[in-house]
Image (cartoon, rainbow, N blue to C red; front, side):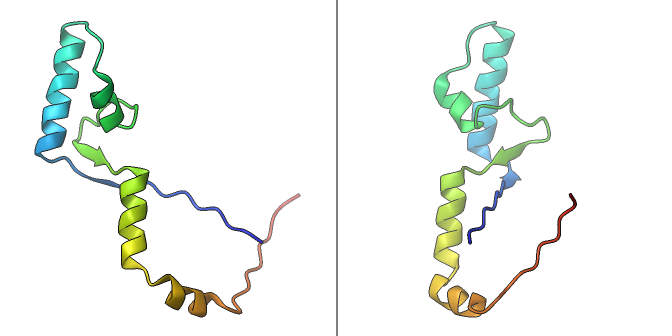
Length: 88
């Protein structure tokens, strides 16, 4: 039995976010392609107008793995059973 989970995280934009957003805006205003590094920074999406900065999947995974004692968590999950009801 397996389980799949999808998590997305955001944080307020910082100085780096503001620099990348300024580059993005300048490129759009000048009708030139946005550099690949800037596009990757924003996870291949337009920058959020509210200033929300995406957290990469890798950074999120590293932060979570450092903060969770997986051996302890496994002991807590042992014997746990879940019932899933679905409609047909």
